[in-house]
Amino acid sequence: QVQLVESGGGLVQTGGSLRLSCAASGRTTSSYAMGWFRQAPGKEREFVAAISGSGGSTAYGDSVKGRFTISRDNAENTVYLHMNSLKPEDTAVYYCAATTSWGPAVEDYYGMDYWGKGTLVTVSS
Image 1 (spheres, rainbow, N blue to C red):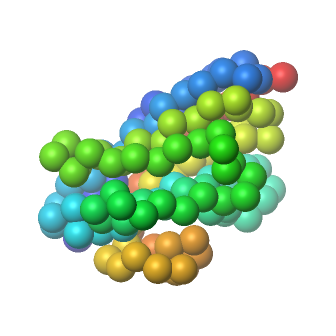
Image 2 (image 1 turned 90 degrees about the vertical axis):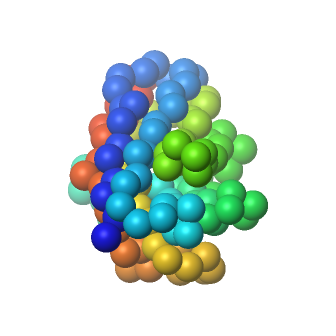
């Protein structure tokens, strides 16, 4: 089992920045690929970014490429999502997720095995 706890959400103005954190505990978390998904009211959960266990591979959703960066610190069992140039359409609950293997499935909601409870990001216009 892996437990995931997100933090760092809040209210920010358009063009601002935030850093989300996901603290992982349980099994050796460095063996897990980690990802961020988001869900806005009335919309489906959307892939944001993912990173392999070693941190050597990353993937991003088209809507955040060039603005968001995912990173991880395996010594601290923490994954980060650095969000820049935020837009009102980035407003959503952001969820951290983990899966045992790296591959195309990390971009799929159904490909993830563990989920956090989410942290709310609100971008004001």
